[in-house]
Image (cartoon, rainbow, N blue to C red):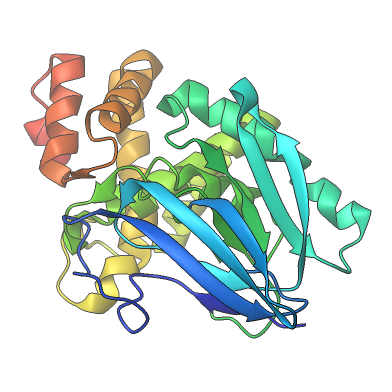
Length: 291
């Protein structure tokens, strides 16, 4: 059975100001035909059997910039994450155990990122695996990740969106590299955790080869298409890695933890991230960031 999915700001589905500067809490009530299950941003607080349909009520108690929801044909798989975090994953009803086992890394990914980025910003988490002709591989709104593939680095990438993009949202389109660049670097950090420092260096070399002559700065956006182009992802990664090499690991990861703590449940700009970098390192980094 194919999945039905709504993601992004959802302006066509529910009233919203469509800006991360105006976050809100939500109650989402979704009625779907059997045997589908409605999964969404937030926590499931009620399930109502209507006969041929069921209604699922999801609550978002922490302000977010938008909600996402999907109606697949899933089976719930609950596991416990770090510090007792509830993780409710939904997999297709015909998923094999081998396929489910690929997601055993989720608690380890969260544990690594908690150490690097600070406490997990939400009270619960979950993954919904989707099927069908959908125009994406995955995305990670607050409290729930929606995936089309069980690729390990993609799982890490989308989980890290809980910190970068979910809790701390970019203040403007030009700041989107603070989400996509940060989470792309997070997947490299996970790969380094598994494969060692050589895998990090190889990932950076690979990105430099891929980006070629694309020299647009990551924090400059001239058109809607540039909000999520290579510069946001790959130039963002190169900026972060250069900052890490410039300052060393202690200061670099302290900057990330300060960033996620100070702007938790809010928004941040490129200027904010630069200011924190100078504050933690006690250095004037103007020339570095200009370069």
